[in-house]
Image (cartoon, rainbow, N blue to C red; front, side, top):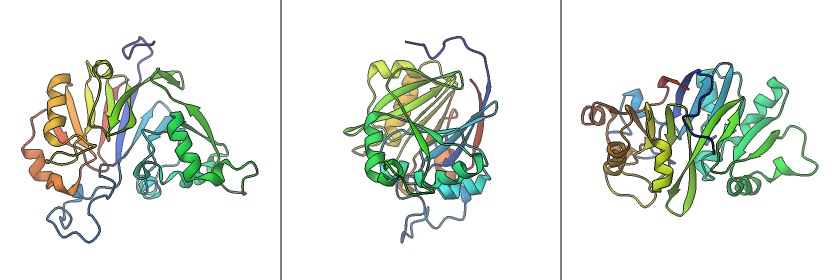
Length: 267
C-alpha cells in the first residue's frame, strides 16, 4: 500500500468550497430562523461539494443538486473528473449536468466511486448506462474505488473510509489535506491516514447529537485527537447557528467553511 506521505513531485493545490450545507441547504425552505433569514452571505450554504485543482487538473468531489449552480457561479469551464463520497441524493443528484462538460470538452468524464455507489448511480440514472443510450445523455467512464490509494494524473490520492450511520463513505487525502464529510464514525486504522495534516475538512452538522453525522462536540474531539494544523468545518446545518457567532466561539485553529472559500495547500 502506498503511504499518504509517499515521496512524489510536489504540487501547489487549491480547494474551493462549492457548498458547505446539509441535504436541505441553508436557508431551509419555509424556515424563518435567524440563520435562514440572515443577510450574511456566509450563512447561505449550497449542498456539500468541493473543487480540487492542481497544475492544469480539476476534480470535483460530489455532484449534489446544486452542481449546475455551483459551476455557473464560479465560471468553471473545465473538469477532469468526479470523485464520489457516497450515494445519497444530496451528493449525486446533479450528475446529469456533466453533459455540458462532455459537449464543450469533447470527451467522456471519468467518475470514481466504490462499487456500491456505482450501483446506486445506475439506479438513479439508468438512461446513462443504457446499451443504446439516447443522444445527449451524460458520457462517463466508471472507475472503481477501494481503500487503496489511486492515481489521478500521476498524483496519489488516499481514500479514507468512515461510517455515515450504516453507510460507508469515503473521504480523500491529497497530500497535506484531507476531506471527510457525512461521517459519524471512523476506525482507528482509518484515522491513521489522517495524521500529520496541514488541513482537515470535517463535517459538523449541529450542536445536538445526530445519528449519522458528527456534531460540533464530536468533530472538535476528533480534531483534538488528530492535531491538524488547521481545520475547516463543513456540512453545516442552520441548527449550528450564525457563521459569525460560530466562528467567534471555535478554537483558533478551527473555523467554519463557507461557500466560495478557497484555500491553498501543498500536495
